[in-house]
Image (cartoon, rainbow, N blue to C red; front, side, top):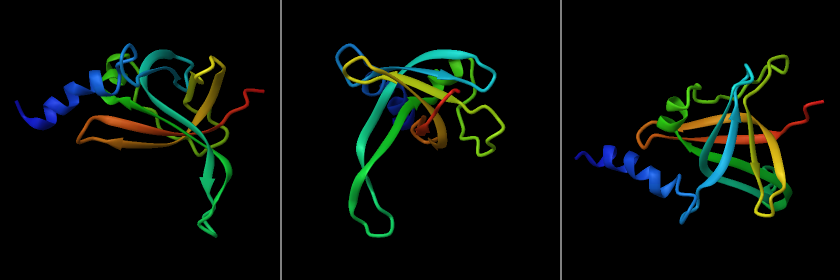
Length: 128
């Protein structure tokens, strides 16, 4: 089997295994309000780099990485960032390690079409 195809199949274990791996439950909601439950890998870190100085500063850097084939088979499009503030964005929800839920909007979408994953860069979301 072609190594690219094998690598994409292996994502079921390396990316989506929530039993024995790093997979984490994630809910993605598209702009029409359709929600799907997926498993991927998330990060939510309280440190970022100041672009002017190159120094670490307190901030928040959040993203999830998901398998494109799983997103498509769940029935939604691969999420993208929506720069237009008047359009409802894609939303991503996941719990932290202590079970506290957080909801984010998708700011940017970075697909890797060779491997078959997409990293969603997340930003703050207030639904009020």
